[in-house]
Length: 508
Ligand code: SF4
Image (cartoon, rainbow, N blue to C red; front, side):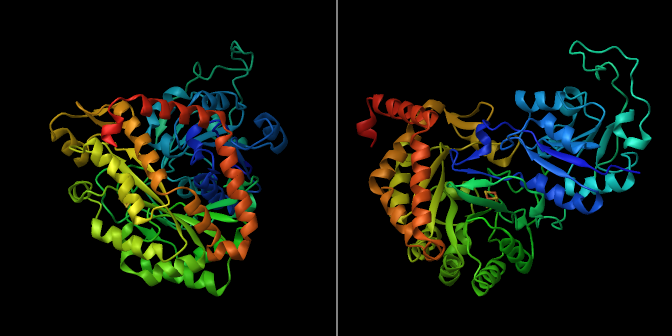
């Protein structure tokens, strides 16, 4: 006898800002939890996945209706008041498992802050949870810490509940902190495969929007072979460098054929690390006439090498590339270990300009020695390349990295705040925010949004799936954005700060 009815919960509030991509233009499905559900499904009688960002019904109604024997909560992006309250209010006679990226990296905090938690799943849940279910208890199963108490076991192995214990002040039963059991720490399970990345979409109960159209997100590879100095994205759940592993092109295309979304976001850290695989994916998509608009992060390297591949990606439906351009100064690209030169970036955009693929250029500002004029020059460089949208971000330096050491070895440089932004004696965080606004304004003057608007409508896949549908979606998204009070408030604040500065005219 083991658990048969797990309820998987993504415990973030609809208002959590970090859960809304690109200022609310998209919501990403809880892909990690969907992968866990895909791996668990064959091992249980039934399961349900609840995404609190989109769920309309109270969680207690769903619990009452589904009657789970295990509730697994995925803490990917940290704890907050909402997720804490949700966990504290879960029924206490059901095994509570907590896991996810944040839970793995902050295991001691989980034990301390969540006395209700019976089992802590450390590492990849799609690797560990099926083994827990198979075994029927966390005893001796690698990848789990658990409290040695009845609720850590499946229904038939539970000891009688602590019914004699005093109810707590809420009257809901035993205070778990009073009955805190001995914590048992099994060894880690460091495994990482790509076996469950092809999501079983029958478990999904919500629609995820992208630009007001129906969206979906897929993961086709893990890890990254590049070594950018500031990056932690290529790390695995344990904070170690993850070698790049890609799914077979055939399997990726089979998943893309299964989704009915208009826009599919490929969430890989480095989708095109293997250009031959990308070409094979495109060939299959074209052959089978699979119709979606694809968005992905992509590096300069595959784009500059092969103009034919770029055109094929356009034909297959690639609609938006997010490109980590970071800087136009050779010495900074070198310091960031980006692995490409300005010449390569220019070549890549020469190829992109022959297509209707939209591009978002990500830049990092505030590097050691970078002047305000040089940062503002990003707008000129991006417009010259033909980038359609830009995102100038403040550079950050993670603790105890070569990049942080390099930053701190430069005169006057510091690392500030929780997000570890790089600042200097002559350029504060406030200055960087003002410069960000300056770059955006300067770019918009040179490359107005009408250019990407027209380009998007001329994209071959947009013509296939319906220009009018995409046009309406873009205008609706724009309207939603500008009519959003928070967006307007922030935009006005930025503009006021920017125009208030006396030396602005000289700087621009
Ligand atoms: S290419 Fe992207 S994911 Fe890879 S190391 Fe560089 S920033 Fe990180």
